[in-house]
Image 1 (cartoon, rainbow, N blue to C red):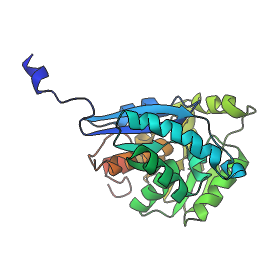
Image 2: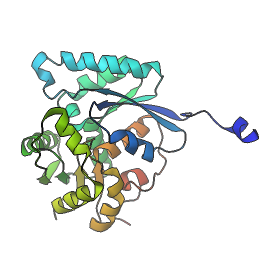
Image 3: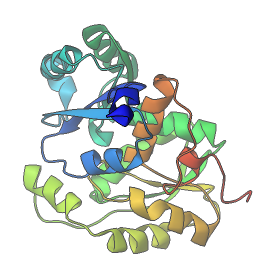
Amino acid sequence: MEAFEKAKPLGWRAKIGVISPTENTVTEPEFNAMKPPGVTVHFTRMPIHFHPEEDDFKSLMDDLEIRLLELKGCAVDTVAYNCTVGSMACPADMLNKQLRDVSGASAVSTAGSILAALKSLNVSNIAMATPYSAATNEHEKEYLEARGINVVAMVGMDFTETGIALGRKFGAVSPGEIYQHALGVDHPEAEAILISCANFASAGIVAELEAKIKKPVITSNIVTFWAGLQAANITDPIKGFGCLLSGTRPDLA
């Protein structure tokens, strides 16, 4: 009884609200595995908007408003739009304003978090491993290079599925397969590897991959969670998920 009386409520340091794609089954377990004491994560889902510009972003903004009001209802401290492709399809200022204004909380997105993480690591040349098609990889490369990140090598995967079925295939790739996939894209000119896709179970392989290649490795989920913690003023070193969260670079150890 005495121990219970001294215990603090769940989420006493921060509650992070997350909007994930409908088919995503990876982010929730990865965020829960990475969270430090006193932090809780709370999820809602919405479809990916691949071409939100077609209606001048109205459908995306409307969908976001519904989910953000849900998260506002549970009084989260930070909201995260956790979709790599989706967050690259909308102007950052527009997306971040919607996230903040509707939720009343600080906000991050996966695309912005990738850029912030690479800046924090002082990296401008990367190799990129994804489960995406060549066309999607090329779009992501163009997005990053327009913002000062040079993609020196990239590799995707070949799937015949489309839509939600394709997203489910991403989530079904094993960590061992992802490890070999990412290892194969390493390049002498790459200062780091980006494993892109929030529904790609890669957070658990990062520490071992960094130890192997002696350079930083980041993933869509690791950077989004890191940025969410930063937005909530939480900077605890978190071990087991690579240098971005632990604060110890493998190339400097």
